[in-house]
Structure formats: C-alpha cells, structure tokens
Image (cartoon, rainbow, N blue to C red; front, side, top):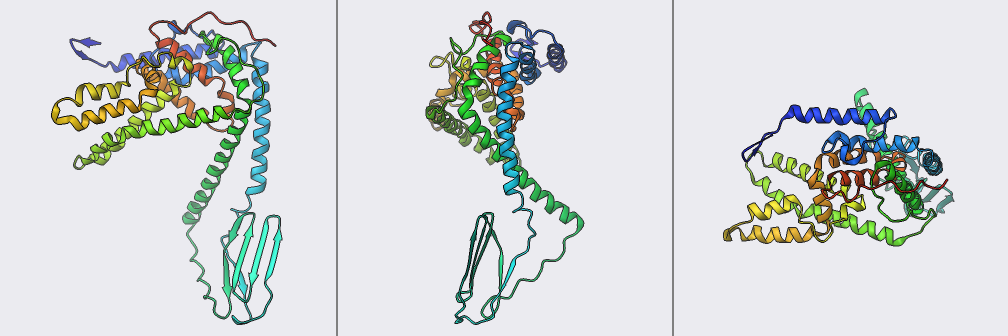
Length: 399
C-alpha cells in the first residue's frame, strides 16, 4: 500500500500471498497443472522455494520424460553409490584407530650397528633405524605416532588423564563430524566428474521440461545426448567462479566501514555481510538460466551499486566514495543483466536459492540439475515485462 511517497508494508497481505502460493503448489503436487507464468503466484518466496519440487513431480507425470529422467538418475546414482562404498571401505578404518602411539625400544646406544628395518606393503610402510633412532610408521596413508624408548631417546609422554563421559561424547562427535564432512565432500567431487561427462543429458531434459514450465527453451534445438569431454565448459565455470568471488569482494571495503561504529560495529558488519551474501546468491541463482542474460550489455548496474552512486557518492568532498562507486560499477558490469532480473522480483529467486542450497547435497543434486535451470527460467519469464520467454510448448521429446 502506498501513501504519497511512502510505501507501507502490510505483513498480513504478505502472509496471505505466501499462503496462496503454497496452496497453488500443493494443488500442483496433487496432480493439478502447473499455473501459466502470468497466472502464477509471482513475487513470493514460497513460490520460488516450491517450484523445483512441482517441476520434479510434473516431470515424473510426463509419459515422455519420466523414463529418460529416471534412467539418467539411476545410472548416475549407481556410479555415485559405487564410489561411496569404495570410499567407506578404504578410508574408514584409519580414523577409527585408537589414539595411541607405536612404541619402539632400542637396546643399543647411538653407535650401535643394528640394521634398519624396512617394510613396504600396500597400505603399510615401516622404517626403523636403530643407528639413527629414526622411526616412521604409515598405515593407509596416515602416519602413526611413534614413541622411542632407549638410550638418548626422549622419555615417553605421560598418558593423558581419562576424560569424562561428556568429554568423550564431545570428542566422538567431533571426530564423527569431520568424517561426515570429508565423506560428503568426496561425494560432491565425484558428482562433479559424473556431471562433467554427462551434462548433455541434463541439457536435453531441461529443453523439454521447459514445455512443462510453460517457457521458451534456452536453445532453438534440443542438445544431442552424448558423453562430452569439454574443457571449455570447465574454463567457463572457473571464470564464473572467480568472477563471483571478485564481485562479492568488491563490496567489502564499503561494508568494513561499519566496524568503525562504536559498540555495535561488529554486529552491523555481520548483518550487512550476510545480507550482501544473500543478495548475490539470489543473483547467481537467477543467472542459472540463459533468460537472465537476455539484456546483457544494456541492463543498468545492480540496484545497490546504482543507489550508492546516485544517493551517497555525491558532492566534491566525497570524491573517494565517487571513485570507489565507479570502480564498483565497473567490476560488477558483467552480471548487470542477471542482477536486473533479480531486482525485479527478489523474493522468489531467494526462495529458489534456498531450495538450490538444499538440493546441492550429493544425490539430490543429480535429481535437481536438469530442473533448477528451468525453475530459474520460469521465474525470469514471470517477472519479464515484455513476456519474451513465454511461448507455446515445443514438440514432444522422442522416446
């Protein structure tokens, strides 16, 4: 509601819109058709959050897409599960070993003539040299602590005092959490390799899922389904990742000034950097669709940068801020189009960003990869003032 120049936010109206969006997606999940882009519950957080799930269910209901989608997920899932089993079988025992050192006793002095002991076996390496009192024991790539006992050797350390029950539980949780993080990270790397070779199938599915979403596909023709070794794709991904870090860091000098505020500077900086991070997470979520780049080269700078240059960096005495603002606009110019798309309707893109974060977990990522770009394109079509991305569905996919 607008009174003069002031905009009054009505919390009840916002809640009602979010509930309406939830009801629309619940109806779609029960078997109803997904609303057309212009009749969808636009501008709501719940809409962006639920859209990937609705598209997933709609894809499974499609007689043409269900079989190729499930076949791709099954093949990838078997490969990923095989990697997980091998990782658990080969790397689970080393960290579970008791926290005790191997004790090596030397009977002679430093001038002894004992022959060194060397054992090299797959997963086991032992080197014991009595003359130099050198000890090295490695099991499955992990070095085992060695305590030397004998002339010239340091006395063994005293055994640590037993911890309490709560301390032992806390240590166990820490060790288990480290193993879980390492395991999930390894699965994510394996997924990256799987997607690298088979991403053409994702693009093929996304082309036809666009018809379910009621939007124009990103390409004129469906991609050819085949294995691909594309180093240019890796280079593009790497450049985009580096660009993302540069863009995020471009606002840090300005945000860091908040730490100068007495008493609450640290809190203000923490809140500001969180909001700053979520803004760019929403922008990069919008950028997952090629439709977000339709205005590349003509879109204005992001709203935050544009507002800073127009309202803050004014007056000759603020020339350092004016120089910073111009440099800031130059650094982020490569994502102006995606930022403009996000600025038109931020709430649904933030909802999709949250869904995307959850779906990035190993296994779920393989399910969501053909769907998330279509969901981003659907949100682009809903907020586009020229209706450029809404079109009749393409032909049905070949069986």
